[in-house]
Length: 430
Image (cartoon, rainbow, N blue to C red; front, top):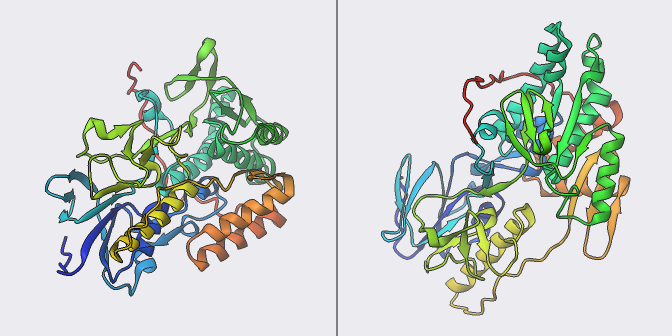
């Protein structure tokens, strides 16, 4: 991979430039370590705003930032665009599509991938939203379906094209449903005046008894109320069993006809081959309280791919824990390099959670108080703007939001890259 060897510096290889990987990469002391960051993309994605790319609210370059621009003019810091296929823990090497690389310390920060819970049909026919290309697929799909609906004479076909099913009532599902509902109310009637927009239906399916399971009951109820007011059909205690590309099959013989199923029902760790079965729990790398992989002195895992037994669920697979873990691990490495052995176990500090439902509608849960409505929506915007990487991205996002607020307009309704549906002859027994 053409990385020079520096005799007096230990090489730290970081796989993944998500929230956790980028954080630790930026804060490691480059005078003490040679840092090599490896990622399959040459940009960092701000995933909490992917749903806005999918619903034509933002262009993809406003939530992505060049990795090389972040690390430019940084001594002893290297970036390589590559897919890591295998980790040889004995030889201390990673193997990629562009060659192999040895390491002294390895940090796995590969994040998460969509979890279909073993259902091959759903995996094949539904649409995930974990990356910018996937969000762009959904954007093209929405616009193409409305263009196709104009050409259909059969109302049933037209309705199926204009019906959107979102599976998963967490923040992603709630925010996506709200954005689609606002498109139906404010945008699409003007774009398609010769189409009966009332044929458009938005269904949000949740397997448990309430939306936003990770938030308070009060916030859950507020989100339910706001989505109902926007015209979203909410199905609680509704487990999806199968999908054949046209019909969603649920428990108790319930069905919804739709050509568009967006899967937001769960994620799992993006694992790399090379670990033993005993190293994996809940499809994530098992780590100790210092984020070190079990049985490996020089391998660490952080972010969504890491599982800590000391937390009942992980901690949660969201951005705040990933950022905290990245900061923590960088601090520990820097202390160790300075021969300071005062290293405390990682403790996740829950600073709160939030979700936006639409214009002037959001919910925020913090340690000592909760917010809803307009104030919560302002807080949500401020937090997300500050968290975006790069001044340009913040300005573009803020400008788009201001324009949309006053003009009810999503200006990036463009089919730049047409999306082609998968053939319906795939069906497998789930």
